[in-house]
Image (tube, rainbow, N blue to C red; front, side):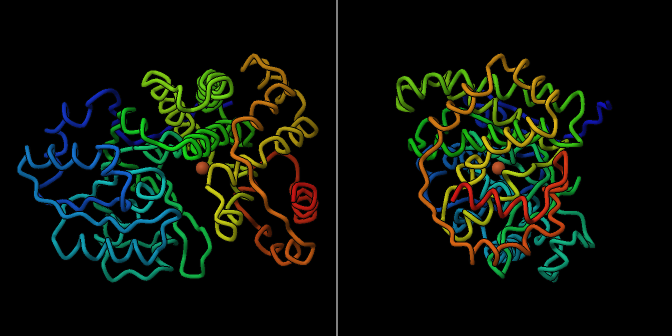
Length: 368
Ligand SMILES: [Fe+2]
């Protein structure tokens, strides 16, 4: 088994890491566009910290704060063209997965202002994307350490690209930014991190390093989940939040090697069509995913539960307890209508065994 590994991002975490590394922000140029959502970056203090750090380095900036959850390609074009028009040298993305993924697309568009949507996703870029600095404010996405951008296209479908040129050059992770997350957001992002770790472990392309990272991430998450189950998310201390954040980075490193698998492949339509938070939409498939792997890869499944030191049934119960509840009912007609999505789906091909449309349809009928 190989140990191939490439993550092209300088990562700095810990209390006040933005403030104490302001000079690094000044090293990418004299103008930048901050890409973020409407409120959370302001509320959690990250936007204020970044603005002060940029000002201390004499970097001029403008703020694009119209990135919504499940960012649209239209908003990325709007921000990318703005970055181009102000002559931005780099992009600072602040937020959870949505602003961070968007900032990667914005960086491509800013450097290639005439690019079409099709060429953006096909990675037919004439010019190198601008550098992206990522400031994480949730503990789930892992986008801080991956090159992946998942952007909703003009047809309303979540579509991604991943390219060695879109790793953030620098990522800051100050766990204090995650202290203000709501209960449901804390849970949905935490189970996103869990899904990244578990899916990565069971990918065909998992290797000796991604598996270690995935297991380390799961163990940290399980510790925090213990507390969430017994005392609720309001009881999480800054130390607990730091563990969740670090686990999300471990999950990010793991999927940077392998990509995601069945739960992420299936989760997207629940977000697109039912507004279910991304992490929850993916993690709702985790227990079935474990069950599937028990059948097609029993030794690997045994290895996983050995490594995380928890038995399968207990693990499934923990996942169910931490996940926000969802209430979705699917008709047979709708499941059939969804079928073309599963043909040739890249994330489905990463799984062991053969996952075909009939398998997916049966799973959707069973769950919803
Ligand atoms: Fe995810």
